[in-house]
Amino acid sequence: MRKSLTKQEIVKKKPEIDAIFRKGKKFSCSGVRLLVAPNSLGVNRIIVIPVRHYGNAVERNRIRRQIKEIWRNEKPEFQSGFDFAFVVYPGKALDYATQRKQLIRLFSQAKVYLAN
Image (cartoon, rainbow, N blue to C red; front, side, top):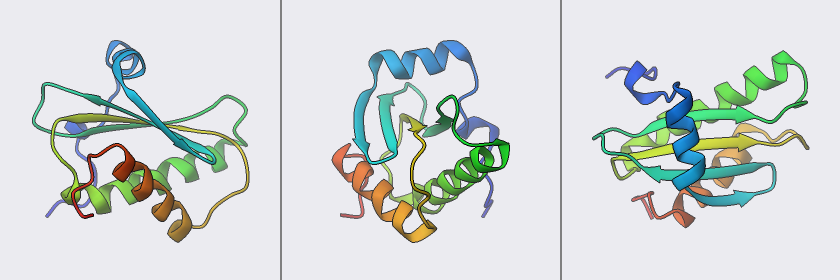
């Protein structure tokens, strides 16, 4: 099984990102806002967006990697056909386990997580 994200699983085009922000339902907790929008594809896609002035490049890349890793490990538990946008805000840095619990709670609120 492929462990990395495929090109199909990453949202890159500006019109697609704008559509997520326009049509998506918002769910948030401390430091992260999740937007979930249905897509017409059979695959889930993701984008992680740290807000402007979120630390330095090392911190921005670290939070992107951390959220993508959590999403990659949990993606078998998701319903198909959704776009996920994570908007990350500065604040206290969370360890992997705490961040994972926080994101799973957001996925459950969005009703796209099947493991519960």
